[in-house]
Length: 335
Length: 246
Image (cartoon, rainbow over all chains, first blue to last red):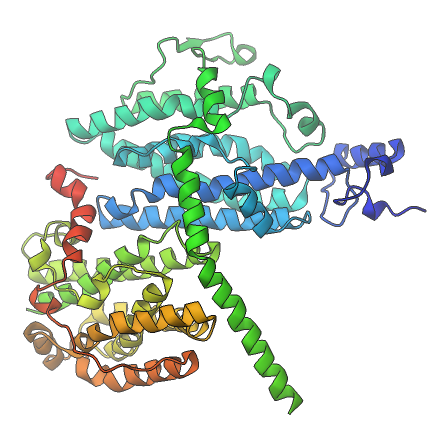
């Protein structure tokens, strides 16, 4: 008997991971069993999940900023309420995701510090600015749309807490996507100025949305192992293609043009079902933004740091008050 | 002229809701990033129903959005308290406590209104406001009885905001008419309940009610300079693209 429960815990050495252990773990994955927090797991599996769930949570939190930028300028009371509720949902997603990551032995505070000092990444889509109201519609439609493509398969992820969190997240995201499309539709059917506003927003967000699926499969470093562990179920390129095929007809329906001169219907694609060929993605831009040089990267982190630092005295006060209360209770109990 | 009294009340809710919404994404902790928009949504929801009802009573073809986005500073009738800038978290929570400690008993009494829509709003809003008292009151206590710094900030918030609280109990001529008609409760009758809530929270927060020189004028459209900036931001799209549908 050996303490398998310790294997893969932070600090657990890799040499504990015998061939038999790894094979048994893989067999559970292959049998579609869910891995739960107290189960033994390889250190690399735990690390991958902490990284991925943490990044996902950070993306939700940083993602509150570009859309939050329009809450105070939403054009009607109905839109204002819907946008507030949407941004609040994103904060909620951040909260469940941090909780899911905490089951793997990392605290929300540690993860927050990693975000604020630049060690942890978040989705680079949020490093683009929201320049008009139409961006709010386009983000709902394209960015949430791309997120859903990525996240629906995560509802079947091998790690139980992540898979379960994603079920609720996906339900809310698909509501957001419909809301976004409805904003886009209203603008597309509105005045000439509104149509120009929404076309401009589509022009700016189309390529960054395609980049959300990550590098081409050939250049993706984490893909193979994640597929094997069933953390990931489809490749970046497969998901990107699915997104394009679903989205182009939606743009056509609204009379908007997708800013890709090489976009063509190809009846032979997708095993004869047909699909769109698309133009080359600007990978230089992708890597520039991923490496932290996106137009809003500094501002986003600065805003998060400011909120965290400005709030330090509030968190300190809450802790101090809780201590005082506990001490008073103890005195009362002793009397 | 009941619609004017309802517009005053709607303005209070919208402006305070707008102020709370400015926190979204910038709060001291994630839980408050969720709670502040939640409270903002309660307030904006109430404002919408009240504007809509006021527009129906007015019967001049205006919509809730016309009332919210197409009136200028001098036409807004909100209390000075609700338009005050957020300041720090202590000021935001105290402002919320002052407002909710008034609105909870106000909406509770309005459940007997002669107006069906007001009764409907009152049922929902009285529960929401009771929750806002709890949330804001707990924070005022934590901060008042937390660290030295938080206690100083809380005392400063009282210094900053208490002078705007007398206005809560004043009724404009339009509001007085609705009070006589049994549409809205009489504002000066809410004082005892408000005093009791504030006294209870302040005693636990080690805060004192200061002597102040009251500031009023909101109901006559005489606001602080801060309101114009809030409206400029809030109304920007409606002003830049007149007549557009969003």
